[in-house]
Length: 429
Image 1 (spheres, rainbow, N blue to C red):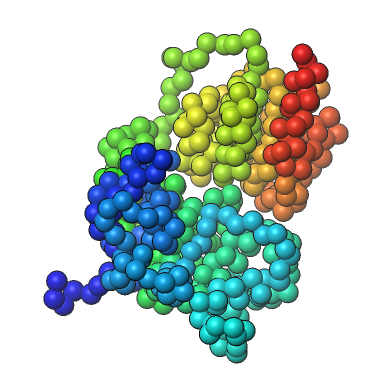
Image 2 (image 1 turned 135 degrees about the vertical axis):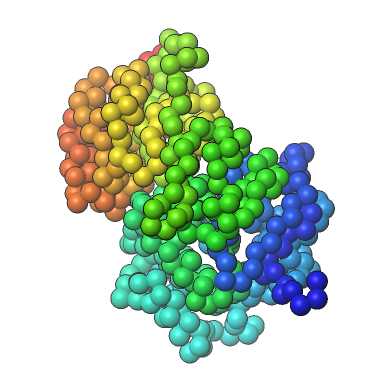
């Protein structure tokens, strides 16, 4: 070990049991400064549990997570916060705090007890906001900015925290492709220019291949692959871990690998039709995941689509065993995907539209809803206004307005949707 630098992050024979189930098995994994490590694997593989163990939010059954050589659970909370910053998948903001003040929260661990922020803290917050391109918006409220801007604010807060280690849990969830690329480019630059270590849980293998120095693949709580993307990602790995058939290609310019999954053949083994028509949920980027879980919990039959492979919503649908229409990543919805999607829409007794980000590649999901509100109830969950999620130059907003004119109903959130569906069920009975 002499002469070898201490890893910034290390899990050593890490085993975690939750609810009587072993979530992580004897996991050995390291990450060093200057490196972006992509942590990937199917839902339930243990990615988030590993990150939460590093933060000290989950107590290991056996083994340790070490930050700069010291066990997480031996460190006081303030000391942990000086070593590792956390960027969650999403964070509910309950007050419309100005962006500058929101980023200043990241300086808490550096403040002496019972004292406020000083000039150095304000300078750190300013530098972080400038780094993510939001300094000019510093007086805007956190509730007033778009989803992509809010993710950049969370990144700025982590940067202002000035830690050697940054942990990110699905940082690109709910973002359109432009914001995904922008955010991961900033994280990679942060690692290389500041000699920091970042570990990001990512579902999208093509994004991991494009931005990560290393890819670590978890399956059922075990580390099954670890190394540079070009060495780790393969057709065999995708088939064995995700159960997906794919073609591996390489970018002729960068030489980086990328995977083109082939759509599964659903012509055989389709579930037998039932008398009660299903609820079809349109979503993307994780926006539909809580809706799918809630409706299944309520005992509803549910379908979903059309979604790109590796999308969080599609993985949740597969986890729940829901019929879905899918497309390859980063591609517009093609004729086959749209045909599958329309078939599911034709079977639906109710259609629910989650508050997903709409771009040119998935605009067809809204187009295929036109004219359907006259025959089945259509509910638009509008937790955030469509204008803040419209990346099509206003076309998505215009489609939303047409759907409302045809009879689609806007509901403010998931509880309101469940209440509306319950009332409709009572009326039908």
